Image (cartoon, rainbow, N blue to C red; front, side):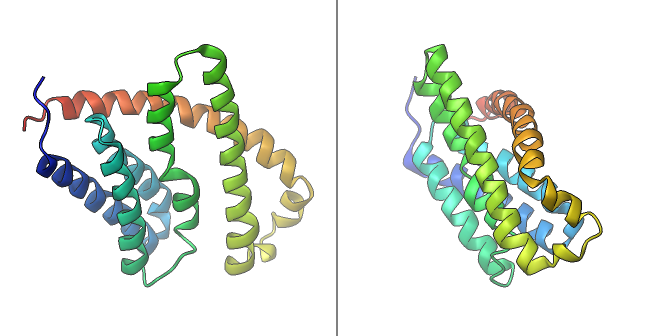
Length: 183
């Protein structure tokens, strides 16, 4: 198999970066689309990984954060979940699938990723959304505060398990679509 050129790797990573930054930027300007922007950005970050361009994807992740930070009037509040977890998750999944072949190590990696997701959501909720968005004024906040860790570690871990399986499947789909691209 012929090795792809550096210019192809740069172009593919640049296209992925533009798609990811555009999706998150749109999500920050239209609040309803922020979650969809994160998911679309995760799909965009899977594009360089489909050709095994790990460094291209890592640089795409950094450039996405930088461009989104600049386009969103330097609002770091909307970038914290993406920067801490969602942007790095495709790279970690790729490395996990590539290098962890034994089942016990794979399971340990899943447990570590679930704890990472829970900590990222705790960080986002506790230090970003509550102080800066005034969630303590919401009618549901006293109930959520009382049972916060049960909700986070129970519901968050369950959500992550479903999300992670779907992201593994989506990576296979992105690989199939990008495989059709010719240099």
